[in-house]
Length: 291
Image 1 (cartoon, rainbow, N blue to C red):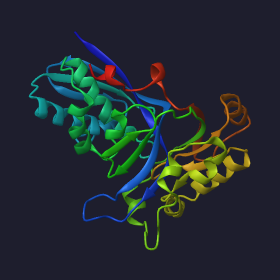
Image 2 (tube, rainbow, N blue to C red; image 1 turned 120 degrees about the horizontal axis):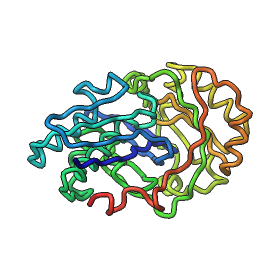
Image 3 (cartoon, rainbow, N blue to C red; image 1 turned 180 degrees about the vertical axis):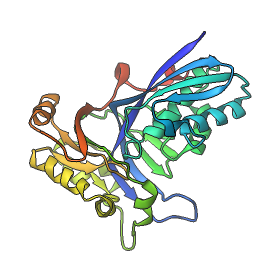
Image 4 (cartoon, rainbow, N blue to C red; image 1 turned 90 degrees about the vertical axis):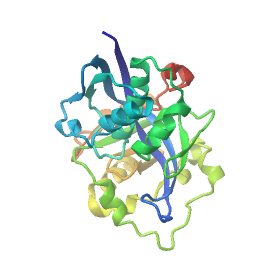
């Protein structure tokens, strides 16, 4: 019986500007997203019916993006086969790291491989956009500029590998709650577009930005404390990812990250880990992943 195994990476937002709604359901955004070496794991096996098996019981409901992706995939491509998907969660749920979206994108790729359909990225993108706003990003290689409501994704060439100290929260933070409290009156784009795609290490502090941080502080003040703790430890810059609450600092090397982590002690309401930009075989999700 055929089996497909995939790792679904988390993401960090190095830059996130949010704009007023234009009549739709979602706010348009402008963001730089980086895939990192923190993964969920998915195993796909042929079976008589569709089911997701996970230690996280909440992820076996119909609202799970893995099940949503599977349903849309089968309908779109006329597949009658069943599949059992084993999902091992390592990315915290509702933490600003895009775990659900990454799982959804990996499901599209995994099913294409399992059922030998040899679908391209372009074949899968319409489904990805329907599943969720962050899902298209996870079909592309490397670090990307993401615009609109997530549908416009542009890989950033020659992006340097970055090392991060990442604080994983032990509590969820509602994306909906953060966005509902966001006041964009008088806000403007933080910096010019040509600046944010040039990740020059000495300029990271002036380039990194997250419009949602101040709102998230009102929800969970510990996020601000984490950011200040990271800055006190000497990271180049620190930022909350997405709508929170995961918070990260960028450092110059793996050795520096591990040195700070070893001195970290206990992190209140969170866990400190060392991660980096993820590049599998020099790149991620190039054309060979879709065949």
